[in-house]
Amino acid sequence: MTTLILSGFLALSAGLLAISIFGILTRRNFILLLIAIEIGMNAAILNFVYFAAFSGATTGLDGQAIAVVLIGFAATEIAVGLAIVLALNRLKGSINVAQAIELKL
Amino acid sequence: MSLEEIAFLFLAAVALVTAVAALLVRELVHTILWIAIFFVDLSAIYFLLNAPFLGVIQLGVYAGAVTVLLLFGVMVTRKRIFAREAATGIGPIPLALALVTFIFVVSAVAELGQTERPIRSYDPSYLSVNLFQTNGPWLLLLGLIMLASVSGAIYLVREGRE
Image (cartoon, rainbow over all chains, first blue to last red; front, side, top):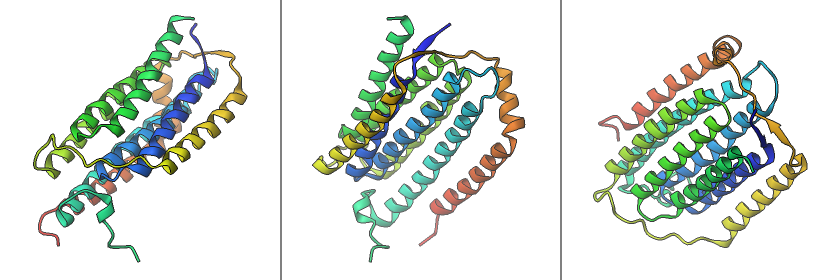
């Protein structure tokens, strides 16, 4: 039977979350922003899969079922995000988020 | 050190390196190539964790559909596909915030200790029962939300809208 250390996996997720936060705060391109959000989302989905895999129960795969639903949500989010990218590109001629300031006071 | 641990260390290193590379390279197309490797790497981690169904979904949805969608996004929004991005500075505050988050979460994880735990193997039919019977309403909700958001996306990009 395969045995592995749970903390190592959780540390990987923490690293991916940190990279995602860094990307969201520094990148100004909308597509790069979406990719940074995806990295953070994947770190969260990985956590559900770890705990489903290490739980030791014989039935009950709630973690994996939630992961399937979350992957679907993330794909939807990318579709809507890219629609916003296209609308922003049509309005502004660029996809730099620093130029999208219509709603700023 | 067992074969699985070596595989995990390799996959984790690849995931971290490709995630950083995707956010730091200057050409957007290269970013998408790095992120494709990242998604394939995560699907390998799912296979390592005895979750082959999720691994296949990750390959199909992320490495397949999301990557192609992002490539289309890059293709239609710029004149030269391989044009370089303007360099954005890496400020000290985002870096510090990311490091603080990492240290905070890892210090919480360290409380778990380093005991080796078995990875359970299961009959994949359990997953389908769980997905479609126990969590059926969630799946239905997912379908409805996807329908609504795709109609929203079409509304956003349709022609003749000022």
